[in-house]
Image (cartoon, rainbow, N blue to C red; front, side, top):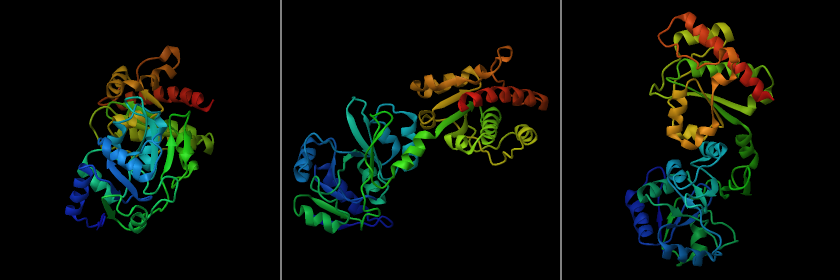
Length: 355
């Protein structure tokens, strides 16, 4: 067994490539993470995985967690999860959270995106998922330094990448999303209360075309209404808005700003437009659209989102039920008409949310 030292702040690329080469050849490499040290093998080498089971003395019915360099590649292995699971990923990935869910082949798997810069570099260079259980004999104490790994495994592994002591020296928190709503199998670095906050705080998204008029107007109106109800209700919902066209980082339109200031006493000068993407669609519990074209666009991005999409016009009185028109290029009076429609719809929506 060989040990190499690798700095996360000033990495030696030759050492990274050495670790990657050993992994590609089916070797077992001890790798530092932010939680504890792990033993890594590439997931598509059956002999390497079998050897890892033997070295760890791990029961064959306990599969290994797969590690990925980023959230996109990790979620590509999973079936569609509930929105709160994606919000957990937003907050804790890269980081000390392991999520268990069904793969696209309907098998339960654990996935993780570690934040340690050394393993991040190795995973990026490797571009293959790595099985990475903790560096210990199954059921015994986890190794948190390269020296402890060497004491435990001696010559039974091929390489130790010494990245110093693991910063947390505590295992990742393991959350099983196959339970309803979820089950914490192991409380590690992340406390269960932090996960519960994410679960209970539902994400509401308003969608229009450019995210400079209607959807931010709706966002701020609902925030204003809920803020006047009770502190509990404000904490219960995260309210955001997006547009379907590329206008990222544009300020709110002048007329929208003036109407919100006059009618709601809201300063929306900090708003910047954002384009909708698949991640925010997957992570939103309720999606409200201004027009049918917006619903169609979202369904194309993610077909499974359709049951969570609602036309805002359905919250208008029957005599006013119609799409919320786009005021861009229209008069200030037209902006006021749009505001009036939005106000009526969102008052009804807020009653629905509060009940």
